[in-house]
Each structure stands twice: as structure tokens, then as C-alpha cells.
Image (tube, rainbow, N blue to C red; front, side):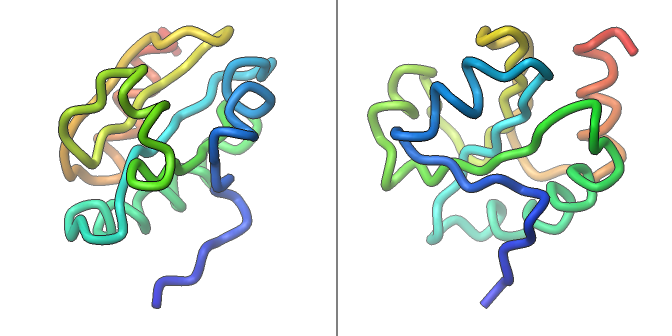
Length: 113
């Protein structure tokens, strides 16, 4: 089993407002599910991103099966979907399996860094 690393914050509906919507720094949310092979393959890239961009963004994961109301609210239709939130609002999303470098470029472009 893949070990959850401390830098990636596990999310649920009870933590959503505190961690995502009320965050003072941008938050990248990885919408995923246990049964999704590509989602599991994204895991290491997401962890690397959490380490390389520490202090610039928070990185978190939300299991769509356990938190369907949030997935529906944000119209998550395919996973893995990585959605970037800033000041509580979605600013960008990327869907699919990509490299850590591609995700990092996506975040930097979305934040105009």
C-alpha cells in the first residue's frame, strides 16, 4: 500500500472550508479514488510537488467516493483532476495523469509566477 506522506493533506467534507476555502495560500486539490489506477500513479508526482512548492501552495487529496457532495459541487467528471484554489475560488484545473514538472508548470502559470 502506498504510504501517505505528511506534506499532502488528506481532505474530507469536514476539513474542506478550513483547509481549502479559508487558506491564506493557494491550495491544489487532487480529486482521486482508490479504484482509479491513474490516480494512484499521480500520487508520487503530487507528493513531489508538495515538497518542491512547500510554502507557495498547500497540496491536498480528496477521495471523491467518500466526499461525493464536494466532487459534485465542483463538477468533477473525470479523475484524476487537480484543481487549484486561490482565496477560496477555483482558478485552474488539469485533468489526467502528467509528470510532476507538468503539474508544477500548470500551478506556476495559473498563479502567474
